[in-house]
Length: 412
Image 1: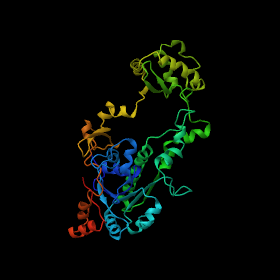
Image 2: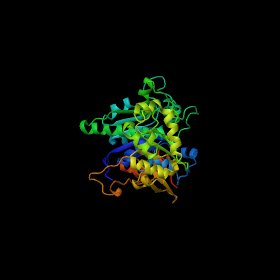
Image 3: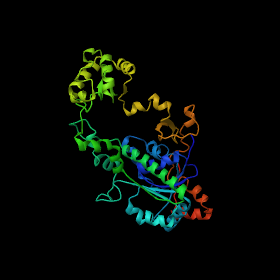
Image 4: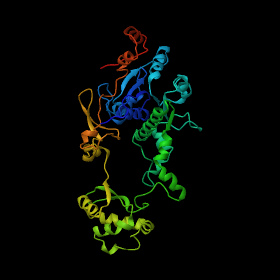
């Protein structure tokens, strides 16, 4: 795959998922991303344990998902030497990205005001919970609270009259990481034109609001959430179940064009051109009634038969899959959206790949745009010595840094 960010250097001072995920995307696009951690490491190294994943040094697939293709540097930023080393790295870096809270960055002298004066070429990017202003600006904000709970997604995306969602860990983080990477890419374009850096800001709360933009607008005009599949906004945009207990979702955006074709496929010629159901406005007005009719009709047919109906009528649909099913989805595998990746211990995990691909010629096969995992997520400080030498430090200086615990190098 063509990697447009080759030659770009990124200093990654992030933890958990959202910030690391954004930097992972930049690494996949070709940037040299150096992950800087304290001696005890990114606390995200242990997050997988809450989701039944192994978190060993030689097998940490959850952590690898957001930190592959990076190099690892471990610095004690509370020491003068550690701060000096990081500052030397920032002198030639293109991007500094952090998910530390602003107060912590100020205490370390790594806030935007300080670094932009010292290194005006530097793109300074931060992801936080709630934004730079307002009463919650200094609050801790993981995706479960800032993205899901506060935004309304946790309760309004559920089936009506049920409990709030127990959300998938990292869902809001990963969504926000894409915007973070995109914002940094835009800043790199500006830097290429002007030679100057800028501040890039995103919060989990902002991302959630944008992700819910349709509902943010529609609810001001009478649209209500949460909804129920028994009385949806449109009965031809809803979930149904086949006779062999397969859930599927169909999506007819033009009821005036497709509803009659659906009725014919279901053998309900008596409902063709029925003024209660054949138009968008009428089917919405009679949503619960039409939903009940469609539920009864679909329940007479197997999923295979229903797929044939949709194919003949050119109706968009998909089976409703579980996450574990997607791991083996042929469409995901054919496009290498999911790729088997060998862990350090020799086991294999099917890893999700970051979503954007680049090429300079029309790809003829998936190999032309195939993503690569050139290195596993680094162990704590795994590449510290290698990186220090690149910045001109001598063996004697490096030995002293190691002895003084300014720098840490972990190994198996």
